[in-house]
Length: 235
Length: 300
Image (cartoon, rainbow over all chains, first blue to last red; front, side, top):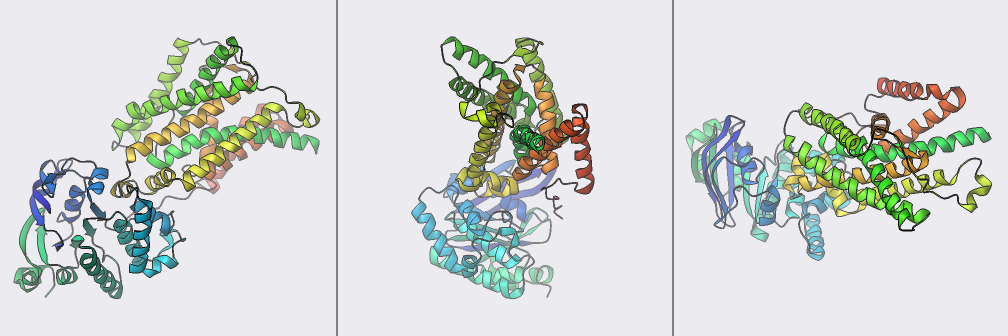
């Protein structure tokens, strides 16, 4: 469904992605793991059109989306939950959710999705008139995921949703991701440093080092892989 | 007490104009962290367009308040077009450049627009017709507040209320706030950030144009240089209130207006600027971010 072929992305003269290719099939959960600075976030930002690749191609269902504006890409159904949650701090929870549905016109469907995310994360219902910046880290992550869901994504990209959260909250969030994937057949592409959790959730995984994809396999196999166990699982 | 009230209302009138212009500075700063030094020139251009349209309207036999309204509408449209173009040619190409570059571009545009009007018009002060008639119902309170002051106060307050509603309640207003709070996240939810920035310039310019026409009609003359002093004063108001904060710009404008009015009334009008800028220095020492400004959190 989402196909990235040989992209090269630069920040000025510094090359961040070298010939990165990956493919995600409809309904799959795929994870991308790697150390700090490997290029995971840049991969997501390239897909979303924020840091467009200098060469290579990104396509959704066979249609090229490379070079499209970030706005068009969201419209196509690729929606990102960025690293660090990036909640609009001085807007209420409800307003943050409305912003997630910014490009959608059908108010009834938007309201329906608003109710859906509130059943996924009942805490948001309680906090709906509170400013985003006053929420706890876990609540902000839930809001960030909900905001992305408000766009009705076909592919949901998540950048380190477990960052800085307590293990219990991480488990809750990962369970919900599984649920979203099952209930709506939403394709999920998950970037994580928390390799263990991510590989347990995912169907397949990519390993990234220094801007290159170095390994691709089923998540179960990666969990057993000696190199991965040593480098990313600390075993 | 009567004298105090007179100064209070005079300061309120003056301050509400400062606030109207300061909003343009603060909204632009809030979104792209740029001090748009050419904003005062947009105000001046608004006043000139008002003058030209008022002349044309008078020729065609319009009179009184209808001329003011037509002149203001024309000034709003014209100044908005200038604001939009200004952003497009002078600032947008420098997006992503170091912050100093658009700032210098802004100063350049300010000088350019001043000289452009100087060449197209004249360096002399041109008389501006008094477009605000004396209302009869103002007769009993005319000692404290005249009709022009009343029109200025009502116009600025209605404009500010409309602006607040736009920003708080409408979808596009929410998108403006989202862009101000986190521009790249705004992109990720599908907001066309460039369009929001253009819109911010258009709104700011429209407010400045309203101010330009009102003040020109109140004072009775225009000149290519009037944008400079108005710009400096409004910028001071924006910084005083906390640049980037919309309520801050309004409060800063009013505080500045009152300071000048009371200083002129109780001390000497020669010293009103001393008090105004002295207050600015004082506030910046005590609250560097301005009265309502928030110190920017540095992301680590």
